[in-house]
Length: 591
Image 1 (cartoon, rainbow, N blue to C red):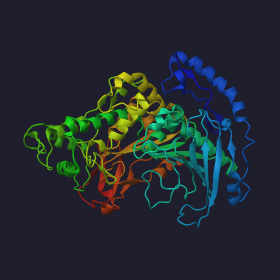
Image 2 (image 1 turned 90 degrees about the vertical axis):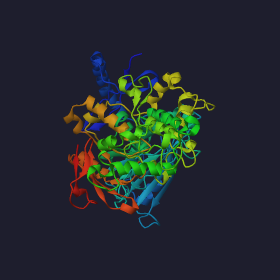
Image 3 (image 1 turned 135 degrees about the vertical axis):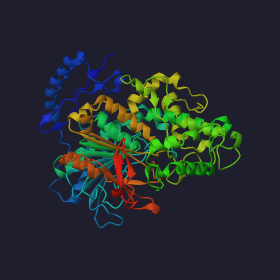
């Protein structure tokens, strides 16, 4: 069946109601495809219908919404407790929402650095009887700045994002968004994690899957906007979303699926292509399990191997600082590290596993698998044949295989490897939906091509069609660490290249900025970057000041305070040969 236009999703912009032309395909699946010439008449017809429908939409009954702006902060906060928001007040299917708790947190409360605010907790109720609620938190500051900031989650979510702390990679020396006067909001994405790590059991429930995939973003946003209007008597002037990892995925969802709700977004190291990411993780985990487990690389071996890579590459950017910035030169310098011959300086004699200071042929084979793009064998997005490929990881250019104090390949064996978690959970619970499946031996994606196609529509955010966001004047900043072992930087680079295919250089530069940060991992990294990305986004959206190079500071204890320029991809920071090696002023962005 052909796509049909959704009527009517819109954002009021400068007094004009703008009809959305996003499409809904078979079974209600989201599609982000270019509008074909043959559908122009349908587009125009839909636009007219939207214009008429907008009268009814904006005249909907909001008599349930209290008017609290004239009350004291304490009384207004208390009045929100028990509030029921009808399903008609939320833009996607629910059975409404209920506020179950409110509390005015005084500015002098113990351990509170956010100033005075009303902490609002509630649940958004599902349509299907066996789906969980979406539990959310909205914080309403007494010193409201007229803006909102939605905070994204991480991993498989399952815990409420409180909005009380710093946003992803924000310098800790800065005030939190809530302390700065933002209404902040977040949710558990519509399920609770029962197990540590990647608990994918919620994937078995379709509504919970959709909520995690993207719907919780819109539903939580809509509830927060009603609470904002009720508390302050006026709508939020600017709505932003920021997240890292899965939260970066959620920021991409906001841009791609709900562009009328947000003025700007920051996506850090986004897990946007999540289905393909987890299929690649399955291949990664299998590589470590290969050869009866002999391909696994122990922490001691990793320490020795990483030291060899950094010895070969650290000074290629003119600075011996423990950061590999000149990636292309590093890949050239480590070319022999891929070989199963005596020419490989990190290979054990005869390729046997003889020492912690070298790698066997089986272990070198595992690194080569990581360094090879994952080819699914069939495209998962009908409008882009290239989406059958998920890009490579970074084993020969600076990966430390350690992050946040944990070893990513497993401390005692390959079953503990980080990528084993999502590489097992998504195939088991979301794709095959077979709890008995041996995902490391018997899982064949080709047998589930139809289901994988459904899932990418539901839970991935990989569409390069962000026309609506651009037309609305929205701005997107996204960034990725060059040594991220959780989500490879090449995933973000691949998305940037797809955007370049869709938009000309000037158009793209006018609303999207993409940065890569050498040394930055997923959680920490050899350069544990902190970037004031919200400041950059505000200046761009509100004052028209597009960000150029930014500056990142290092939060690692041993190197705390050193700074580096954050360069637009494909540029990287090169030491000028003079000046303080710990200062961004001593580096220039070059290609």
